[in-house]
Amino acid sequence: MTDRSFPADLFAGSRFAVAGLGRNGSAVVQTLLVMGADVQVWDDRNPPIADPTQPRLTAAPIETLSGFDALILSPGIPHLLPTPHPVAEIARDAGVPILSDAEILYQAVRRTGSKARFAAITGTNGKSTTTALLAHMLEKAGRPVAAGGNLGTASLALPLLPDDGVYVIEMSSYMLERLHSFHADTACLLNLTPDHLDRHGDMAGYATAKRHVFDNMTADDQAVISIDDSYCQKIALTCIEHGLSVAPLSIDDRTSVAAIASALHSSTTLPGAHNLQNSLAASSMARHLGLDESAIADGLKTYPGLPHRQALAGVIDGIRFINDSKATNAEAAEKALLCYDKVIWIAGGTAKSGGIDTLAPLFPRIAKAYLIGRDASLLEKTLSDHNVAVEISGTLDAATKAALHAAKALHTPVVLLSPACASFDQFASFEARGAHFVDILTHLHETEAP
Image (cartoon, rainbow, N blue to C red; front, side):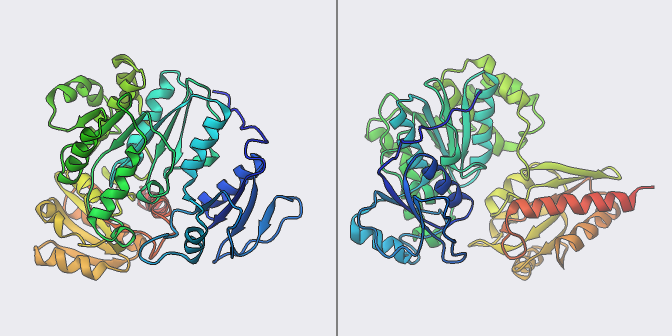
């Protein structure tokens, strides 16, 4: 597919304020300027410097929003809970909408006249795999496709697609709170378990945020919603009551599972029941977007997988090292533990609410655990209370080296990095944590080589 550019005057005369200049915010600023908008930017942590080559760019604290069309907040900046950022209060006082860049992308695409379709994917776990899998299916089938959002490329950095193109957007709850006219042709809610409760207050608030993915949809669109957890079941019923076409998503649906079973059996990158759910979701959305069963099967068989999601990071002396650094909560780690009969487990970091208590039924699969990061002692207590052999290693380097020796001594074929915790106490991101794990293994392999 040849990338197309948005017209240079698409937002000429429009004024936007952008707060937060991380990966998302920086992409928003650059693209809005290319589209002809006037943009004021600010970042509390890294104050920007004015660029004299950009006359439509103002770098200054946002003290008023009078005359602005919208405020675009980076996803990590709260506009409600736990405490609204001052610029969000300025926007509300001025009656200026607070939007996500996915909303601006939708507006931009429709302003050009393109009829490209939008597929939106959300849920607590599995969003990234489902997004990447659906995009892969479409690309293999020859459809123009652009994927991004919460995964990879920021929404507003995606290219302009033609009428037969599809935007596949992974949407976090933070993004979904800041939509206005965004209209998905197909949208998926994979699952809901407690997460980000500081930003949403409680599970009811979190579910409400997730439900926004179905805003503006009609009976001609498709809402793919899990019926395997109670929170999603309620949302599915609400969508049906509002006249939406709901495609129930369940790993217990024998007919749906049978339709993809052969192709999924041929895949080495989609292990476990959680990936069955992801595959069912992507397949359902692909059908709605016009792909036939042959194209769907081809996409499943050839899907290359995503980094840091149960990726094989290396093999040393027959022991497989699995990089599942993306598992930043217990629910995600559960999906990985279910895939192996016996593992040496590396976990830890900044624990989410509830720690790892819910993983207790899977503790018999852990031959020994090595813990890292801030909340290692919290995890140690839980594991010790269930008689799991455990050591606090502190760092990922120490844990990986110890895990290799334990795997040999205990004749355990798998070392699993699936931290069940956020990474920010020791790493910039889960990606950085996973990449460091791979680097450690590279050096270990050299050391252990005969």
